[in-house]
Structure formats: C-alpha cells, structure tokens
Image (cartoon, rainbow, N blue to C red):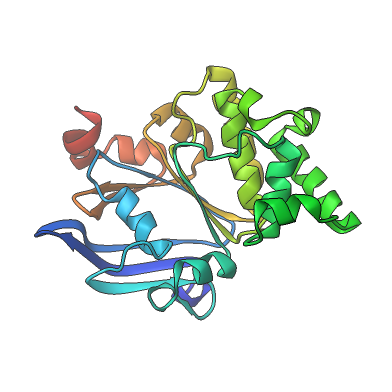
Length: 248
C-alpha cells in the first residue's frame, strides 16, 4: 500500500516545548479501516501526536496528511473535524442534563445551539441514524435516561456515539477503558472492534490486556518517536520496550 492509500500519514513530525521535544521526527501511518493501538510511557508523545492530528498543536517541522489531499497542517480544528477526524478524550464530556437521545441529537446538529437544536424537529433519516448509533453503542434501552444516570462505561460509549453521529473516517480514542469494570472493558473491546473496517480507529491505552484483545498492530512511542511496531507479542518481547516501558 502506497503512502497515498493511507488514511493517516505522519512523517518527520517534531514538536518542541521550551526546548523539550514532545515529538522527535515522528513517522507513522494508519491504514483505511485499521484499528491501531499506540502505547508508551507517560511523556512519550501520544497526546501531542493527537493534538497535531486534530489541529490543536502545530509542529515545528514535518507533514501530516489525512485521506486523499488533506494537509492537516494547513487546516483549522473545525476544518479537520469536517474532513472526518473525530477525537474522544479520556474523560467523557457528555451533557448530563440531557437524555442519551438528546446527546446524540445535539452531536448530529454540529454547531447549532443546544436550545435551537432541541426545539427543532429531526427528520426520519436523522431519527433512524440516532437509533442505529444507539444500537451500536449498546444504549438503545437507555435512550430517554439522563446522561447523569449513566455508569462510567456507558458515558464513554455515549461519547463514542456522539462522535459517530458525525460519521468520521478516523477516530482517535484516548484511554477508553480507564476506570472501567471488567464487564465494561469487554464491551468496549467489542464496540471498537465493530467500528474498525468502516472507520479507521487509533486507540491510545495503557491497559496491556485490553490492547492485546483488540489490536493486530501496536506502535510503541518513547521520547517522541516510534521505538517498536508489530503485534503484541513482538512489542512485548522487544528489549527496548521492556527497558523503557514494560519493565518499570
């Protein structure tokens, strides 16, 4: 597969903060429909990498391309979202005073105000889309319950659902199973695996068992660059990875 066939292509990215290189000539790519996991110790550059992809941080050097013809470094954060990049942060940010259905309805509306959105009538197509996403995230039975009543894992799934309402081509998911019960972790594995194929999914996570359950390819970052890449067995057996991450 050539570079132009990649869903995301980062090459030679360097980001410095007060002399510290958060990214140091970082190069990696994501295939269409791939579920890729990125691991590494704190300070490895994982969050900075996602900040660059979403337009929050501009690199000192390097390139970042998404899909066919999208130069992410020339686009605003809003333009990147509109192009098909969605990001889920570690802490869920659902609207707790709105119902599950209303949260998804609001996500569908994009930039419209909350009040204007909830007063508007949705089309049958939009209603079908919300119901489809409710089924995907496993919250069909909770559609009329307030966000505040959901368990931690359910809030995480709802936020993923809110991203899906925008129909992103690439999903960036930050530590999705932090604080989850074993049952919630298992359901999250199923959810992310179900999204791969139709979407490209990049998961940043520390839970090694969870990573093993979902990833065919794992990238390990350290000091802002890739130090290992492959399946979980390969990266866990890499002496450098053991030294800087798994051995501590």
